[in-house]
Every structure is written in C-alpha cells, then in structure tokens.
Image (cartoon, rainbow, N blue to C red; front, side):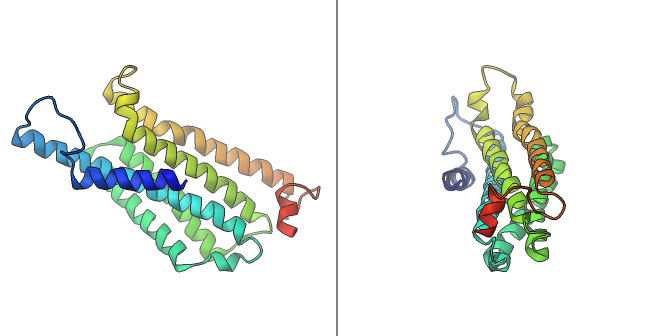
Length: 215
C-alpha cells in the first residue's frame, strides 16, 4: 500500500508541476496544443492523486481497525478524520470535473471515494455495531485498497499497456474494471462472514478472526 500511495502522489505531483516535461512529443507543440496537454495532464494528475488518497484512506482504515479492535475509540484520531474528509472533498471535485469535462471515469470513480471515506467517517463517528464489525471493516477496506491501487496503475499506465489492444476511447472500461470486480467482492465477502458469525457477531467456532478478537 505504501509503495502504491507514494508512487501515485509522486507521479501526480510531477505531472501537475511539469506536465510538458514528463512526456515526449514527436513535434513542437503550438500554443493551443500545449495548453490542451497541460490541462489534460493536470486533470489526470489530480485524478491519480485522488486515487492515491482513496488507497491511503482504505488501507489506513483496514489496518487501523485491526490494531484498535480491543479499543475502537483509540482509532478516532484527528488524522483519520482529516484524511477521510479530504478524500470526500476530492471525490466531490472528481465528480464535478467528470461532469464538466464529460469524462465518465472521473465521475464514476468519485463514487468509490464517497463509499470508502464516507463509510470510514460513519464508522469513526458511530463506532463498531457489534464485536466483529472490525473484521468486516478490515475486509472491505483492504479490498477497496486494491480497487483504488489497481485503478491508479491502469490510469497512469493504461495508454501504454492497452495501446496495442483497444482504441483510446475505450480505456475508460479498463479504468472501471477494478471497481466492477471489487465491489461485488466486498459485498459477497462481507455477507459470507456475517452469515458465519451470525447477527450477534459471534462465530460458531472459536477459530479465525473471531478468536483473534478475544485473544
């Protein structure tokens, strides 16, 4: 997770600060072409940073709830609140940017930020609903980390990775693929463990994560 987040923030920072310097051009750009490249590069740079933020928020939640399972209130830190609030605001910007530029991926992926960090904030404010809630949070957060991380990788490397396979206008399908796979995985995995543990959060057998919770 740390490598993904660091890479996303580093690459987005370079693309935003020097959009013309991080790309190779086969001809001298006109003023209009240069302005378009700068605008597009900075939009993608923001989007990549946003995905890095989602990855960090999801990973921080997934690891933090496990560490604080005996004392959930200890996870309610200013950093956790600030991180998730920032991601929610970035999701709003991504949605607005997607609508303004008519970019489906920007608008669609804003939903991930709302769900991940909105859910994180709800958990931080509400606290665990039952004794195994930390486990559900851990599973969903770690899968969400994968969704955001893989999407960030595809967004940045997609033009090179998929160039021989599909036309550029279809790249958005690959951007959305991790979400299309990961979202059902979160729902199915969480539902499985809720059935396993029952409504009270107690498992039938003292093994696995439920045993860890009481260790």
